[in-house]
Image (cartoon, rainbow, N blue to C red; front, side, top):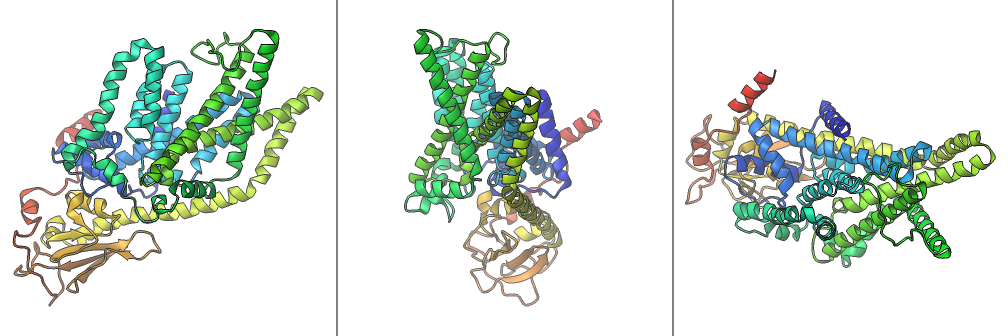
Length: 551
C-alpha cells in the first residue's frame, strides 16, 4: 500500500506539467482554509461545507497564496489516481490471479477513470474521486480483517459526502456487536463527524445546518427540477454509462448468485458443509493458505453480492435525496459508480476464465491462447467506445486548459488594472456566478463579498465566459458601467464612485466615464484594503525557513 500511495502522489505531481486550476467548490475550500488560518471564517455565499477538504486547505494555506491551490489539486488528483489503482486491486482480488484477474483489474480501473466526469473532477480538485479512493481502501481493509482501519477510512469518507453517513452508521453497529474493543472509538468518532460538519459552519455562517440548506438550492438543470427526479436521475445515469458495464456487472452478480446457490444445495444434500448463509470463519487475509479454495471462492462470491447491494443502495439513497429536493448531481453517485466498475471488471474476468477453462479441458497450452483471443474479441467489440472516449479526452483537455486560463488571466488582469487596492477602491465587486470564489480568493475577500447577479454601482465587474463557447457572464445591470480593460478571456467593467479623483490608487476608468455616488455607509472595501496587506504571494517566514533547512 505505501507504494500505491507514493505512486499516486508522484503521478499527481507529474500532472502539473499541464495548466491547472481548481473549480468553483475547491476554490471555496481553499478560501475557507485561508480564513480559518486567520480566524476569520465566512462560509455564506459559497457552496456546501465539506470538512475533510478544508482540513487539508487550512494546512496548505500556511504555504502562501500561490501554493495553496496547487497543493489541494495535488491531493485531489492523487485521490483519483489512487481510486483507479484500488479498483484494479479489488477487481483482481475478487477474480483471482492470472490472465482473468488482469483483465478484471484493467477493465475496472479503465472504466472508473473514463466514467462520466471522473477525470475532470479529479483534475479540477473536486472531492468525489478522492472519496472513491477512500471507499475502496476502506472496503479492502475490511476484507483484510483490519476493521479499525476500515472505520477510520470510513470516517474520512463521511467528511466528504453525507451519503456515506448511513453506510458508516450501519458499519458502526456491526463493529459495536462484533468488535467490542472499538466501542470507545466508535463513540468518539460518532461525535466527531457531526461536530466537524456543524460547528465550523455555525462559526462561518451562524447557521449550523446551512450546508443542508445550500444543497437544497440546486443549480439550473439539476434533476431536482424534474417532475420525477429519481426517474430523471436513472435516465441520465443510463445515458452517461457505457452500456457494456452494467451487462458485465450483471454477469458477475448472476455468476456469484448461482455459485452460492449451488454451494448451498450441495451443503443441504450432504447434510453439512458451509451453506451460503452461514457465518464463515476465515483468517484476516482471504488469500491465506489456511483458507481452502472452495471457501475462498465462496467468500469472493459473497463479496461480489455485498458490493452489488452497496452500489444499489447508494444509488437509491441519491435518488431519494433528489426526490426530497437535493441536487442529485451525477458525481454524487460515486459510490454506485465504483461498485459498477469493479463488478464490471469481475464479470469480464469471469468470461475470460470461463473461456480458458473450456479450452484447458482439451489442452492446457490452449487455455492461454483462448484467453488472449477472448480479450481481442472483446477489445474489437469495444472499439466504438474506445474511439468515443478518446474524442472525449480531447474535449475534456480543451475545457481544462480553458479553466486554467481563467485563473492565469484573472491574475494578469488584476495586475494590469493596478492591483487589488485599486480595484477595491471602486466599491462593490461582482462577477459571474461560477467565478465568485476565485475572484474573492485573488482579491483577498470573503466569498460573499463578490456579488451576482445584481451589480449596484459604484463597483467593478469581472466578465468572462464560463465555457469557451458560452455567453459572457456577469451582466452589468446599470448603464453607467463601461469596459475599461481586456486581458485574455476577461473583461473589466467599472463605475467609479463620485468624488474620487483619478489616480494610481483610484478605481480604473475611462476619460469622461459616468460615476455613481457611494452608499451612505461608505465604500465597502476601502478601509479593508488600506488596513490589511494583500494576499501574500510568498511563503510565510516559518515555511520558507523549513524548506531552506530541508534543502
